[in-house]
Amino acid sequence: MKKKIAVLLVVVLAVGMLAGCSSSGGGGKGREAGSKKAGKTDANIGVFYYTYSDTYIASVRSLLDKHLDELGVSYQDYDANSNQTTQNEQIDTAIQTGATMLIVNIVTSGSVDASSQIVDKAKSADIPVLFFNRAVEDDKTEGQVLGSYEKCAFVGTDAPEAGHMQGKLIGDYVVSNFDTLDLNGDGRISYAMFMGQLGNAEAIYRTQYAVEDADATLKEAGKPELEYFDPSNTDKYQVDQDGNWSATAANNYMTTNLSQYNEGNNNMIELVICNNDAMAEGVISALNDKGYNLGSDSEGKTIPVFGVDATDAAKQLIKDGKMTGTIKQDAEGMAEAIAKLAGNGANGRDLMDGTDSYNISEKVSNKIYIPYGEYTGE
Image 1 (spheres, rainbow, N blue to C red):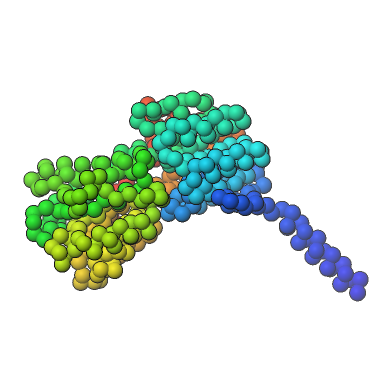
Image 2 (image 1 turned 60 degrees about the vertical axis):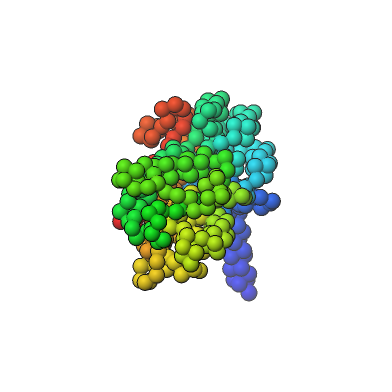
């Protein structure tokens, strides 16, 4: 009997020790626990995402968690659920509970007011703040925020680059397949454009240059420029009103579009351009419901759909012959660069220490650009 009691005591003690070694953050409105490891440093990093529901951001988050685990730092992930007020409150809470660094995927992209508020919070606490992915300034105010605090930096992309790449990719494709794409034989290619978010620098440039650069390629080849499918829409895009770049928004728009603009009415949409791959997925789902874009093994027609991000889902759609192409936004490269700067901050170094190998803005010395790349599955 004594032996049994002794064995039970050993088991209870072992379970208690394991429980004492684990750690997890508490939940709350707009907040979700991330990994919190026993750190190799005293760093306690708050990582703030504009929303977990964005497919690309979800990829960055998963990869960044892995890199931060490897760094051996304690960290907490937060989901703002597309609400800037929520994110500000989360940052306040993190600072009050001992955060030593902020990594911020800001909700209100391109807003100096919003980003300045966050920099001021970090400055008051005398801790580094690293913004990523979503612009904190626009062209007219570039450097105003990032130059206001020596413990501040940005990791993102050169916003116009994706639009230029997408435009060239689309233009080349249309030139090579013009007659096939011209379903009603009117000598022009009608297109739909799905914009992710008003005021977002990436969305603005992708919307602009995807069409402008495609038109330039078409003009050079002696072909007419693209024609927006709905002449009553002077904006020449349809925007996700919630700013979530979502498949649902694009699917709803495209389903409505196809009820009026279709082959039966001899005015079918012949090309679709999306600011990201999630919206492309939504468009393809709507096309599938009407018998289009069913894949390489199908005898049905395929409307070319282009996106941005090169998500795993988009790569599969391209492989299956349901989507034409996308522009790769390098989630791994983004996460790796963020982790590099986070490691600098965690160890008391300048955030930009040892970053010479990265593509750094010529205008703002603490701004790193992760390059885009074309992806067509080849």
